[in-house]
Image (tube, rainbow over all chains, first blue to last red):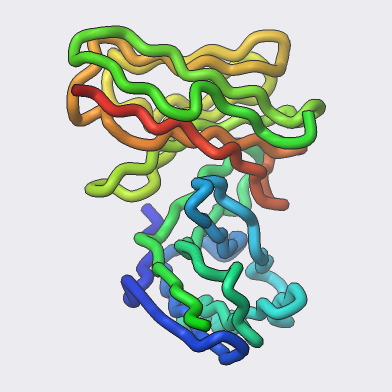
Length: 116
Length: 115
């Protein structure tokens, strides 16, 4: 079974600064996908960024980027130029690369507070 | 619809009562998932639908939980004889393909409180 670990329960960052959230995972799979989801107080989980394990290039989406280290099974998220609207819970998630019906396995989450 | 819609947004029920939670996925999304988010257990997979069939029900915690999907669209999660440990946020998600590799689109969930 896969496990996903987020070791930082809470992090705070000043507006416009950079914050990095850590995520490690354990799997014997070679083909898989990794995701970061944001959950603001509205409760809706919003996809921030995804990474395909067979791609070595790190994914980026505007101010969000990842550092994917496959050998180390590490998938950290960097939020640059933090904005007040980035305040939320952030969840790292793993998905196997099989054909269909792929479940997401989530980490425990990191609460990010952006301070003005 | 434009997004995944869940109703009700909040539900308070007495222990022992049955509840039904509804999910309306994005039009055209073939796959639908239910997850449960609770303080003690984090985010847990419950069930996956491809069309109207449920190839994976492995996450349903007991036989008090059941779900169905009709017309390849709306899904209902039913909890019978609710217990206090069923209190949680129930999240529904859909994906355009059965693989889910592109990521899911989630609804805003139903917060269930059993008193």
